[in-house]
Image (tube, rainbow, N blue to C red; front, side):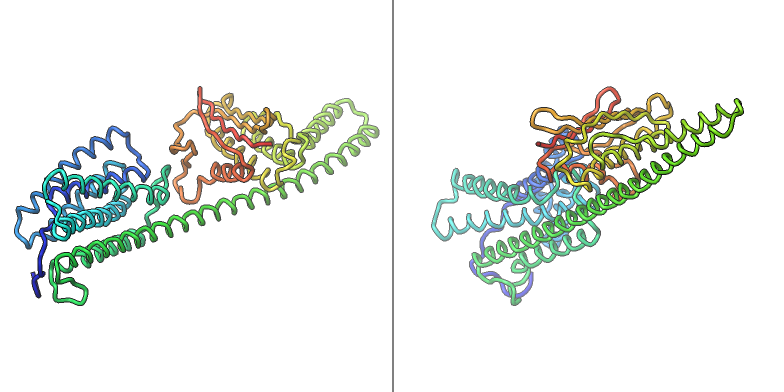
Length: 441
């Protein structure tokens, strides 16, 4: 289109190959990102997408040369549609994944055609079947399987990809620069970054596409690490908050216990001095209230006792029946902060869920702590009467509007269990939400 022509120009990549490559790049990312739609829909979108990508490429090939850029935008739009509807992503996440798939497709297509032209024009391999198809199958298989193996650890399989506006804009910018630089020689050879010989042009194209893919991979890796660090910081902040709540509750319970002890003596003195019969009932009622205030749990673990006593009072205020059978001695090897956070989060989630039930008879929470074989079992059950939101691992998703600032309760429990080599499972049956923690002893 401008400048000097390419010496020993080689044929460009066939449109059919380009369409297959772009489609396979989309499929690769559909296999590694979090899908929010049924598998049947993904397969349907994939089949239609393949036909659509082939149609777009042949349509672009029938148009004049000035249509080239528009044709590439149409191809990118087709890839975005496959990702958007095949995985059920949002618009921004779909744009981000499509941009990464576009660079991957450019890399594999360029690598394949570089090998084809080298074997045909450099080595002299005949360009007939089955040699041509064999090179395509092997190159595409190695390229996309390698990309899948590299990228599967770079994306969450149970949550949408966290794509900020800055990340999306940066990815699109890198994609545009990569595509422009890799195809610069086809536009003009009269630049410091262009090639002038056929095989050299494809080498530059493959190298630039590989660099673009590597940069996007590093960008996603950094974004994933930053998100993990932010989530861990939020979990740690919640752990500290739960521990501080435990310390405050411990002080309050001890103060109430002392007050109740003193009041018992005062009541005994007043009963000896005052004789009216009608006052006896009032004193008995006062004594009963003091006894209720001084009632504390005795599980065998002082930290758990404070948590259960505090949560039982909260449940009493909200009309919730909490029953607990716990052998606190099983928690001897667990730190006080972890005990407070694990049981505090589990009971807080149960209390929040049952508080919303209109029927007070359904406001039920059951807690059990016992040993089974070589495991310590912690089970918290609560009745529910609403639709639960869970991800593919069974982790409960927050129902609060500000999801970025909530939803760390179950994650915090998983984090604590993992520290002790344990596991967390969540199941629902007959309107009972059951959270079970297994910790090796």
